[in-house]
Image (cartoon, rainbow, N blue to C red; front, side, top):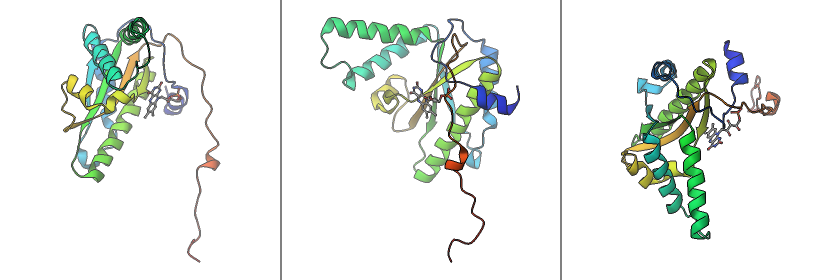
Amino acid sequence: MDLQTAIKERRSIHDFQPQELERGLMKHIFSQASWAPNHRMKEPWNITVFQEEAKLDYADAVLDSYVRNGFFEGYENGKINSMKKGIRDFLISIPHHALVYLEKDKDSHKFEEDYAAVCAYIQNVQLLAWEEGVGTLWTTSPYLNDPLFAEDLGLPPSKYKLAAVLQMGYPKKVPKFKPRSPIEEKCTFVHRSWKK
Ligand SMILES: Cc1cc2nc3c(=O)[nH]c(=O)nc-3n(C[C@H](O)[C@H](O)[C@H](O)COP(=O)(O)O)c2cc1C
């Protein structure tokens, strides 16, 4: 697949087949994505993939965070239980949840650079996956900013930023593309001094 096709035809996937990806394929995707640009060669990305039985604990951590954030407030118990079951079943139905995280640099500029590099890494993962027929969804749900969620996953929030969870698997359905704006609306070429 050529680069332009991968960039243009990749879609965010919301509906996955139950089949798991082979470990070798996931390693290929995660290792080739490491060619992402990164300042000072810090390669700041780290990945933990929750799958199989680990998805149960992952779903519990997500639900506990939803409770802390007041997501279920105002509903009666029966409704809360059915909402929780729906969310748990949905999360468990996704073959892999790849948490991408980085160490927090105390220097805010370096931290921004590291986060930018991790985002470049994530897009590489998405494109490499697409090339292999694998779908991804880049998610940044509020629980990624919940310190107790990070604790639950064994990542001290004082040390780590949770950048994203990539949901991964073979697509069941590929959504229709969402058109992009003409670049003229966003890009300006400056070729004369603007100080006169
Ligand atoms: C930083 C970031 C966070 C995102 N978070 C979510 C999310 O939490 N849930 C979701 O459904 N999609 C999320 N997306 C995916 C976007 O909604 C998606 O890229 C956009 O709708 C364009 O669709 P496409 O990727 O199929 O072209 C996120 C994308 C980015 C870059």
